[in-house]
Image 1 (spheres, one colour):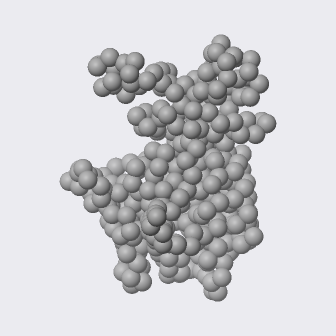
Image 2 (spheres, one colour):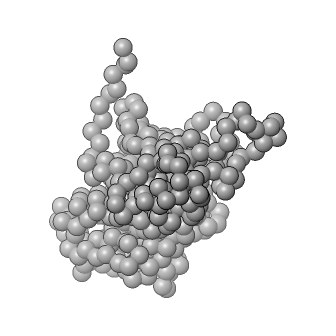
Length: 358
């Protein structure tokens, strides 16, 4: 008999975001979930041409603080259909090519979802040198189980996009696996923080929670939404690399453990007033946290936030994630909750007129 799993109550908002399929530029399913849960709690709710979802609470508050978590995920875009009906594709976002072959994928089409399998030449048909190499994208394809181009084109068009068919599942207690913890967790944290702050009386700050679009292909949604909001403070919420696996190199990448709380970033891109404020609140509220050092550019929404308009006092937080940008990422949902608690408590400490001028 299999050992029963401990039950962990996964919030419905997070559960639905993880179930949504939203490759960059095709975020409609995740946008709809954000709309359902966040819009009713916002004083102002806006949608823009890039697909951002911008929720504002306490619009006359001061200072203004922007929270971003991106709604998009890795995916594939169909580029060419050959005479036998095989689909050739380009990756959307930074895939590990080793992980692509032999996966079920779900392609979003105008008529619904089509299932296929990513294929390549079998290992038995490779020589020794070929087996040691990672296959190029153009040496892989998606197989729909059809036999002609006409049949494939009746199901899928060039420009359709898809994702891995790997769904969220709890493994043990609060530890789960999903294809897109990066960054449905961040979008959930941003939205849920606003939801909880909507119940707070005498909130000084104006809070803008954004589910951003197209982060995986160049932080595009964060660029436009931050410019439009022109906030005093901005905090990007994303995943970081856990280094608690067997061959991790802590000397190169730092030490981060799933379940050990919020990752708070320090470094050139991060306003030190914001970073120290987050640390002080975490310690005062006994919220577990881990420190991350980033010497230069951080490859997430925070790099767009910092330099938007006249500049924004920027922070970056997240949770430790194993196996990032693979079909089966792993995270501890207790870290997700810790991020929300930290942001709620931090925003409650902001007083009218506060600024993080250096």
